Amino acid sequence: MKNFCRMWNRTCHKLGLGVYDEKGDNRRYTGLQPHDFRRSASRNLIKAGVPHSTAIFITGHKTESIFERCNIKDTSDAKAALIKVGQYSAGKVAAIK
Image (cartoon, rainbow, N blue to C red; front, side, top):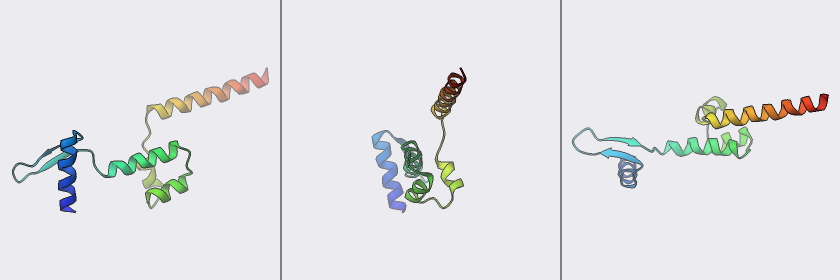
């Protein structure tokens, strides 16, 4: 695992996806981590309409609460939800008239 991490850190540094300082005894890396791909997969599966249970199975999360920590929400999610509520409300008002 140590070799994988070192190779990952060096490669990401060369690609501009992180910063790896390997000088001295305190080697430090900040940037893209392998676990970031799991978070992206969680989010993309849900946005694609895959059922939660299937998405959890694919990503290998043990519980729904752990899966939800990876399924990070952003402002575009809130905006889409508000648009849907507005469309739903407009439809109800139109049906009453």
